[in-house]
Each structure stands twice: as structure tokens, then as C-alpha cells.
Image (tube, rainbow, N blue to C red; front, side, top):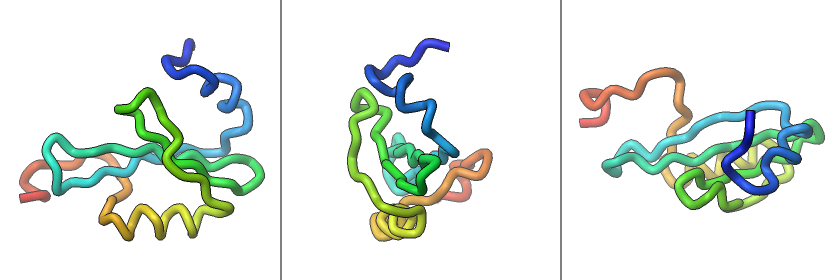
Length: 85
């Protein structure tokens, strides 16, 4: 599969996991992508801005706290409008 973001295809070889996080207060919701690397480093990208790197954290807990501070929620399947309202 070809990546739409320059450089991400090469970085994908070191990825361990990927999570989507959403700010459900905004409409349409703002989505960020948390990528955890094999070495424990976590990076947060903005898919709406050509996968621009937003911030890098040394571990998952720090990345999660950064997202939670801005009231992002981890996507766990469907986010229904009725749950947001």
C-alpha cells in the first residue's frame, strides 16, 4: 500500500501500534494519530495537515497525558453523534 504522506512509509517499518484520537467537541471532529514505535517513543501526527508531526514523547504515558489534557478521546470503534451531544 502506498502512503499518501512523504516519509511515513519508511517510518512505518519502526511502528509498533497506531491509535486514533478525536476531539469530539468540534464538528467536524479534529482527529490526531498517535504512533508508538518499537523503542517506546510515541509521535502524534495530524492527518488533516499532510500528516504533520505535532509532538514527540519519550513514552506512551506522556503522549496519552498530552492528548487527554486537550480533551482528546481515544477512538474505540464508532463515535456516535448522540454520545457527543
